[in-house]
Image 1: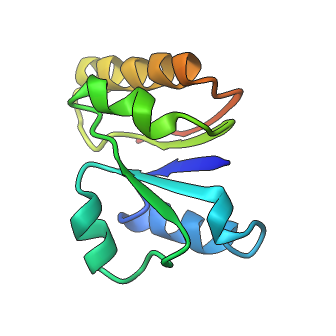
Image 2: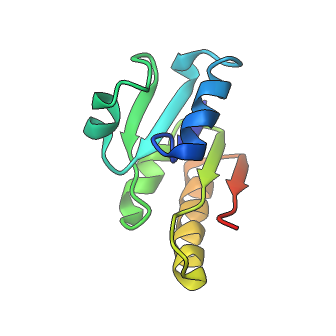
Length: 109
């Protein structure tokens, strides 16, 4: 299973479209702060699992990442390096705790 963050944004939505050409939708998890809004947009196929994951609420991350082995982590959109670092470290720690084996990270820069 692959978890994708940022799938409703610019980069993440393009990554989602590309990944769907390579793996079945049932092998994908979209991790997003607002699952209802993500589903309402209509850009995520119904076979893709959507889970709540909000980097500003670390307790939501490990459950969202559970059952997957790969995480595509789109950088949190903040110009504050320290804030981004804190959120990304929390996401990476949660991924490790959930059993994620591979992390692909996209830098804001």
